[in-house]
Length: 196
Image 1 (cartoon, rainbow, N blue to C red):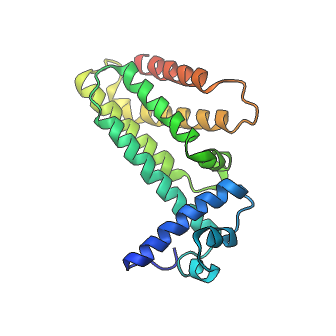
Image 2: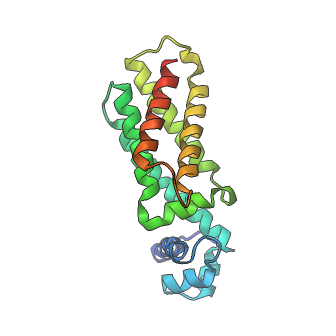
């Protein structure tokens, strides 16, 4: 970001530009949206946009930060749910992930289809950290006898397996598996892995 907004009006403008970026990506796609599309959508001049963002890549990065914040809030709500049942915890988590990717009028799907071009490491790190928190909370009440000291390794493997499997399935133009089938398979995979 070129200039950090200080005043409330400037903060609102930046938020509007980020939301306009989301809308421009929905309408034009990741590869074809421009700063002109964003400025038009936000109802400002391109010059106003460039006061805060150097490029469309900066706009996308700000959008990803916003998406990550929304994801974090949803995941934190899941962490706070009181459950001692591993299957229920995994089920809720995987279903939340699928719903998150399918929501928002196709924005997440467009971002997912272009994930390899985007700075997504923060999103994946957030998922790993949240999964590790889930697993720690679960293990406080339900200790596993199989290598609890390897929890951080297991959370890394699970988070990346889930995220990249979802990304691969959702980005398919003609999917061979339904969301429900994928969800059930991911739940079984995680449960089996944790109980192995």
